[in-house]
Amino acid sequence: MHVSIIIAVKKDNPNLRECVENCLKLDYPDFEILVLPDNDAILNYPKTRVIPTGELTPPLKRDLALSQAKGEILAFLDDDAYPDKDWLTKALRHFESPEIAAVGGPAVTPDSDSPLQKASGQVYSSYLMSGQYVYRYLPKPQRFVDDYPSCNFLVRKSIMRELGGFNTKFWPGEDTFLCLKIVRDLKKKIVYDPQVLVYHHRRGLFKGHLKQIANYALHRGYFVKRFPETSLKFTYFLPSFFVLGLFFGRVVSLLNPALTCFYFFLLSFYFIIVLIFTVKDNPLVIRSKSSFQISPPLVGGARGGGVSRVFSDSWAPTAKEDFRLIFLIFWGIIFSHLVYGLYFIQGLFSRKLKEE
Image 1 (cartoon, rainbow, N blue to C red):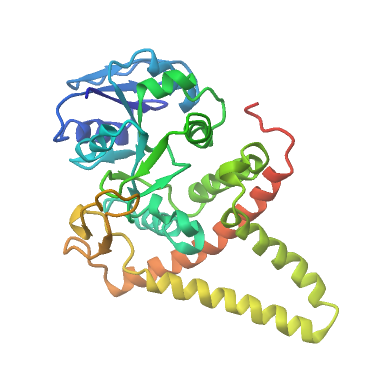
Image 2 (cartoon, one colour):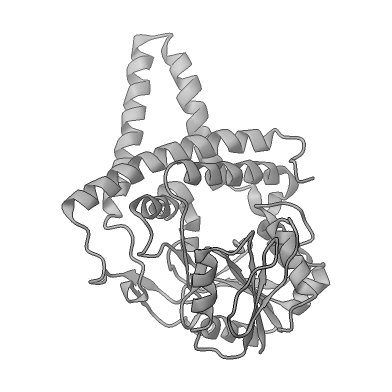
C-alpha cells in the first residue's frame, strides 16, 4: 500500500523538520509526505511535497490534501509529533481487513520535552484527567474505538472520499465528526493499536496547556448536543460536576457549621486523591520505546496487545526533579479540572460556535 503522510502546519518550524526527518527513517518505504503550510516553505527532503494553502484551519488543509495525495492510505500527523520507526508497518497490517476503515495509536510525551511539557503530558495521561481515554496518551491494550484524535490517525483514502473529507470547520473536533461518520454512517471500524506509536510534544504548563484544555472542553460541551453518540458520556461531565460542587457546595456550606466541615472534608479528600494519583504515577515521562513492553495482539479479538510499563535507563529523575514534577502535575490536574469544567459548561449552553 502506498501511504500519504499529511502534515497540516502554519509555517516551517523545528518541530516540523523533526517530524519529516523521523518520517524518512520509517522502516516502511512506500510513502510520500505532504506538508501544508499557510505560505510556501523550503523543505529539501526526499519524498516530500510542500503545498501552500493560505490561512486555513487544519481540517480544511487536510481536505485540500485529499485531492493531492497519491496514497491508498492517508496518515495524519500533527507538526509537533513524530512517528516511531515501525509506525506504518504496525498500522498497515490492520488494513488487510476490509472492515477496518481507520487506525489510531498513542501519542506519548517525548523525553526531550521540558519539565513543564512533561508535566502537561502526565496531566493528560492521568486517569483523573482523561479517565477511560488515557490510551490516547499511553500504550494500552488494543481495542475498537468510536472517536480518536487526528494527531496520529490513518484512514483509507476511499473512506475519506466517500465522506467528502473532514467536511467541517470545527477545530478541534474535526476528528470527532469524522469518526462519528465512519462508525455511524458507514458502519466501519476504527482500531486503536498501542504499537502504532508517535511522540507528541506538549504545550507547557500552565498557560499553553490550559488554553488547549479550554478549547477542547468548549467543543466537547457543544458536541454533547450536536454529536451525542460519541460525546454524551459521563466521563466528559465529571470536571463540570467538580466545578459546580466547588461553587454551590461552598454557598450551601455557609448555612450551617456542620455543612462547612463536611464541605472542607470533601475538598480535602479531593486534594488527597489528586496527590495519591500524582505520586503513584511518578516517575512520569517514559518516552523511549524501550520503556514499554508490548505483547502481541490477541488473534481474533478486539482487545489484545497488553502493555506493561518499565523504566528505561535513559531517564532517571533526581529527587529534586521528582518533587518538582509532582508539584507541577498536582496543580496541573486541579487547574485542568477547573478550566475544563467551566468551558465544558460554556460549550454545553452555547447556541453556536464561531466556526459555524
